[in-house]
Length: 304
Image 1 (cartoon, rainbow, N blue to C red):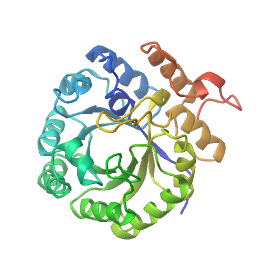
Image 2: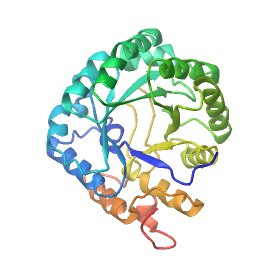
Image 3: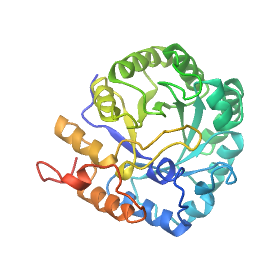
């Protein structure tokens, strides 16, 4: 079934900033999140509860969560890679915990310092804590399209991990093209296998990077297959510090433009997003990858 409304999760404050050499201050991160939460975007992945020695860009997550505005209708998520990260997220007052398991052993070891089975066991340890705290529990299968260390990832492996996450309590599962190697036919194949594995009650979506310029084609394929949500990043910011050459996410404002002109609704004020992307671009030494912020909308109406 194709949906008329696609839910967008903004990941710029987390995935967008985690690889940047310039570390944004707490107040700068708070202002970015506050600007984004005023655009109509329904979900923001605001922080990551990881070891600040490994990812200093994501330090002080608890302080960021304490300082941001919390407008009604916006859900704020925190990323967790292990049980301790999930516990920190609960204590910090997020609305949603997003847990990650990587589909290849080498990448999971580099990203999480654990085997896939150990990460899945960690998920089972925190699932009840998250749900008992009244929070949404979702999960992402990272590097679902390919691994920078092991190469091709079998779609059946992605489906196996997704099935275990669903059985463990995740109400949503995203498949991440972490290194931006996927193409639309893979989107369809992976989605169908995962959908068969987890059943109809689990919301499915994608986290797409535009590393090789296929991110938007993949997003179009995903929505035509009836996904519930898509991750995107303001201005096209993003990358993974543990994946070589993993450049930016698909730009949120570009995605909203495409979805609007395809007939889907997101409820997002695209003009407000462009303003935020332009503001964020001022912190960098080069232009951001987003295109709508350069070319403008056509037709020139602002809400997707």
